[in-house]
Length: 489
Image (cartoon, rainbow, N blue to C red; front, side, top):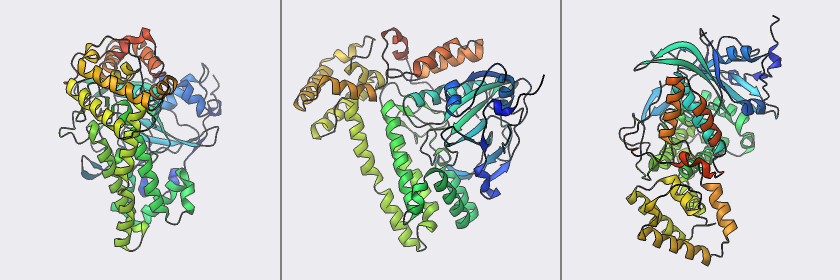
């Protein structure tokens, strides 16, 4: 049979990252796999970046996304970077991921195309460079859920099983995930440039990052300082969105902090059920460094790490550079808290958080923590979008709080339409609850049954649309305290 032209799929790959000095990457061909099989393919995402899959090109595309066949014009590389992991600085790099290039989309945007689990690289550090089917399905599910929740995130184009075993605690099926991001440049990439290669390398990385992501900053009086401020606003906005839906990233190292302000690396992440700021699920976060309520302060800390790498570019005078950077970083707490109050005001149906609304918010969160109330369902109950019976919301102390809320809404002359619109936009009906995620992954990986995951993905694609027939997806697990997540490497 005549081999199909790769243009039939729609690939238009650029390799702008390789314009940087080779200290930033290593050329690396993906490892071939014995039995590539397409498990999931994100047709809507593919269409948005100009790709087409049909019966005629499915086999070719599957082999490309498994790493068995080279895409025309691709320049596969593994990226070098460093990072503070749980506060400790170390040299890192793409240990099991290979960047194929940047797809030029129909609207002329560049989108990174990366194969995750594509084999060993120079940065694998004794790892096998592989990924398990379970962990890649989990990332597919979680990243798509985040996208539909309206939160900046990496996307998952496909999961391809490899036909080989991957050995962790026990043997697992192997898989490769195709991950899309605006960029895989991290705070850790700047740390790598600064600490290992100095000012010139950091300047080249900054120039590239601004040109690709924030070209409007090039004409500012101090591009490095403007870049720091832009990233601070991006990270602040992202964390507020995580808080809004009860998301806990679990491993907020600087190498997992994107300069594009996108969520990525879905290893130990989870969604909070019973509200508590100290909630941690990650098995490796033994001290609660990345707990739910710690995420804002960690984002601030990570930005300070970025600022340190930019100091020589902000001003030749070290003292002045430090002062300028500190002035930017010092804005974070006030900006964050202003956004935090507004977020919770909106979740309760208020436009703004004045003194009385702030008191109402604090009282609710205190009550939720004391009574181990479910984070998602409590806000849904207030908006009559919860189809499950919950006696705790009829307790006298909560009913008293409800009366105070109604009184404040009335005083502020907020009609039902405005209140419902605010609450509907800020409170999802369905999130990927931990026990449901494990249930669908068990069915897929242990029973080869993908129906439950496909159904779950369908529910998560419209998380704000209430459907009384989907009450099972609002149910809270009987005991979530022992639940642990793992990084998957």
